[in-house]
Image 1: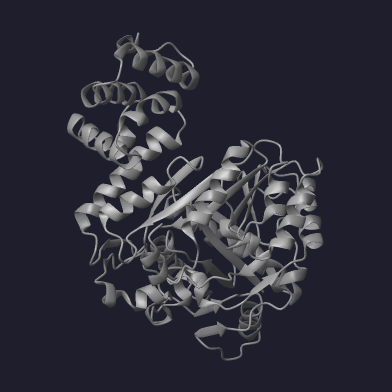
Image 2 (image 1 turned 90 degrees about the horizontal axis):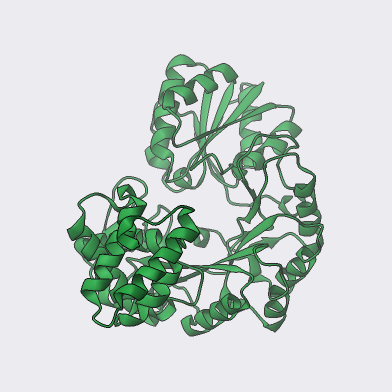
Length: 480
């Protein structure tokens, strides 16, 4: 019997770890397994054709908020052309909203939670013709997790980012996160993790970045430090991305992190807010000052790219208070990302949404549109500020100019707020459709009109420096 595991990824550079985790347990019970991966840009007709050619008896769909609509469309059409095949849904988007999905006539079953035990058992029942439940819930967790490897096969076609998990679960119980739905953390040992990472070195694949999917990589600080110490060895040649809790870093952590060659590792830190009332409401028990201090310290090493997250739309945080969170941490990291709250099925915050007056999208990704403290127009404005920040700051294309201009502004947030407003009045197109020369032009015009102390010749000099460095061609006439 053949099982086809199907994933739709965000882009060609990504790969799906979940279907690879399921491959080996399915093969162990004697099933033939094929993996099919597409991207959001692929036409659904192309996806359907690949699934048809697979000619599987069972199709397993890996469902997330970013692909659920496509998954349901493809599953419905697949059922029409392969009516005898069983279609099984799994993944976080279906695990906590089973009633809605199990009622669909083209869905045979839904697997909730970790699938390494539940999916093979379900497939065996189908193979043997035995009755099975439409909703299969695995609350026990995969007992062999600590012994699993990297799940990628030699020569397998992948994008540049490969994923690895050295732990499952999270020590925190943030009410907006699905990790709070499971309790406890399971770890692979430091020695096992390093041995697995050596396997990535042997792969004949387009592998540039190993991204750890651990929700809090340094939940066990001693183990994390041992792994980082091991990665200092030159035999580890990839780039490694970790999501960490900065307040759990200790002096040993700072010591080993300071020794890495520039660019070898990246760190992502979820601060979310600096407002203690907000953090308390979502059960995120961290000290924001300690987090910012730790992130700034790592950033000052100069060898590690540090990415810091804020989330707009959390309880008790108004538009003005979010601006303060922005100002509190701006400049302490390489990339400050503005995220927007999504009320996911299975989270405590979604269950308590009425308490906070939440308005949110009814379809995935369930983005918040407003609450009792922040309105839809204010959140919409933050979305546009986030676009401006990404285009001008996170791109790195305007580094010298921003270094010169930001001190003229009352605060970082007011700078980005004002620049966003100026560009909107100057050009009605979405920011992503504005040409790079126009982006330089608008920044120059904004600065000259907004800041009386700004010297126009000095400004042009900085803009020319950035343009030459990033565009690799002569600056346009208005900059000369």
